[in-house]
Image (cartoon, rainbow, N blue to C red; front, side, top):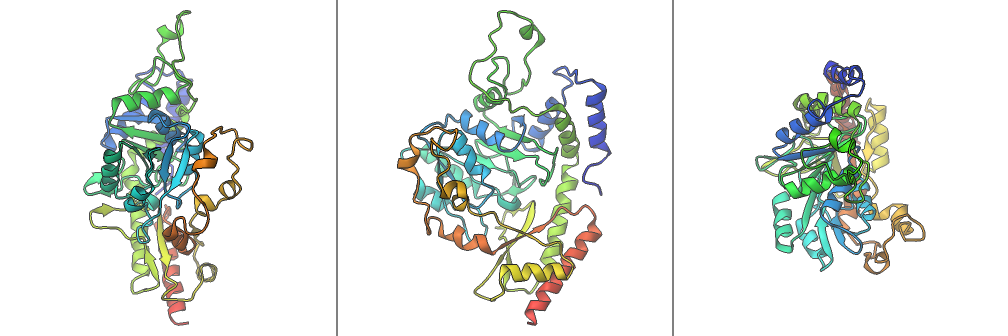
Length: 403
């Protein structure tokens, strides 16, 4: 199995042979969006240059702006927090569940203030958050829910594909994700007005674009009186070459996801009987798509430390593993307040008065879990290689069990 196959090459060649002269009916972006909406059970899909631009556009579509607060988890890639700052809004951190590692709805509820405008839950490592509970909170407080599904393609929550329930859902096509075009992203939504706003924001505010229309018509372009820009938008559109690769990947998505899930099953087998490495909990009714295979080192059972385990795993044939990201509010940009007006192009006078105390204990579960997480790779396209790495994990567990 290859990461990039003949289908992706075929579509790239189609773009090149067309000399980039694509009518609306033959656009690779249009084909990608149509299929993506169908596969993720959504009415609308809007392509973007990356999975950070998607969330920025979603916040803009939701009307989030200066002084508004957006609730986010601290345990994820910091882009989920950065986009709140890009929108001139204030990130508010809610704690995570210590077993699923996903944002805790009870903590979300405790962080709501009169200034709260939106929630960005994350489907961490391929596992859906408890989206029904979060949507209930959103309805109760009239908040927009924007699901960050960058790490979850074809995961399921209570029989529904992840990305079909929130007001808007954001996907990433960055190189490590289930499907990739090198860079890229997608927003899905069932709300026509939100889709129209997202499209305009990612297309320089053009008046002639909308939910299902990603391009200005030739008649508009050739009209000297045409007023192009309805709002101040960004150029966040996905290039056609990237769309070509993404379309090929999307048509193969089930195969790509199944490979990661199969690798995860190898790791499950390797950890059988191990009481001190606990895989991310997958609640009943959830299907994890396993962007990575995440486990937590239970220091209450063993005194083995993270670095020692990783070193031994590599000695026994493992590729090494990734740590969880530092919590967003532990990163230097937050620790040193580098987003204050004088230090950053973001201009919001509200930060100083609204920002949480970012000291120890803000999100105790996240602070306790983050240093103890191992992220094992699942993107092995050579399955025999994956078996070798799973066996290395089993050997490492046996070594420490006998120590």
